[in-house]
Image 1: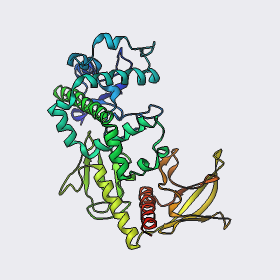
Image 2: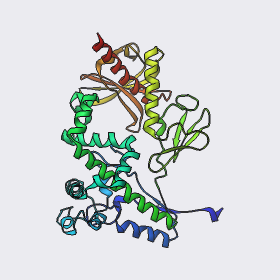
Image 3: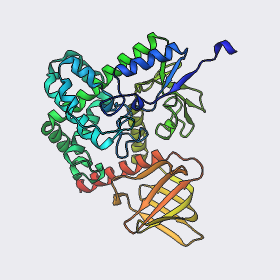
Image 4: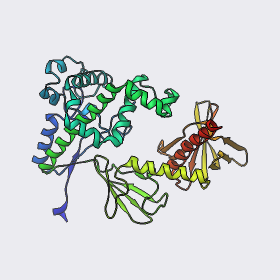
Length: 398
């Protein structure tokens, strides 16, 4: 038994030493791999590598598949000739090299990365064009999202103009043309991230070190709730690096770059967005043929005037083509919400470490509904979005 045991070290990429504001894929990362090898270690465990949003937490990312551009090595870009050491040394990344000043990092690092992009002539790079084609299934939407977010000053997408918020085709076409270079810049960042990350990972593997985020599939069943093999809902479990259906036993592995592969048999969906898109199509079909119905017992909490949340009791929540109906609290509560009241639904996972929640309400009062039976709230979110589209389409047709 003892001969099969292995050990390693947890160290986030951001915690590596760096004179440019944050740890990244530079020579210090390679030196750490060498140190692990010399110490007889087998694993380097890291934290999620996704691009961070407000709060700069690795667990609050804009994308499951994109990489954090902060981790791109400026030293490598200097070697490529798209940056100079003088340009990098001029930037103020903060006075304390033992901590990250994210405000200065955002301004300085992105300024340098944009300068590198402008000097790169990346559109002439055959490898970049290949990357664009192979990763188009997530890259195009991600780059557009980041470009439009910048255009609107970084505000939440829910506050954007209605046409792009609801992904009207004419708006998508307009922004893709209007923001062509900003979109290409975002794609360039992901290309450089992937290049440098895979190079570091290969070096580690060659030296007997596995870089792992061994919990990447944890909680994935909250999004991928329907098994494409047997069609059962709510029987999937995501844990470690795998996703398993408890009903039929089928298992999929999630790779470090977000690809899915079935352990046996057909891989129905190689990418999470394709699986999720299929679930959306299934929900829309149920709405169209009238078979969709949410009918569950819930615990209820209320937020009044956006000041505080109060647990108020138990109740019952239904959702169908007529909208939401919430009843409870010994007959004292009855709230209904029409399908056109909102184009989306706030449905959160493990909300404040309490439970998954479905939130409905208006500007006076919000009702947080916590399903008692582990119902997949992602399905309700999809249903609310698709129902809104169907109602709007019918209204326009009239």
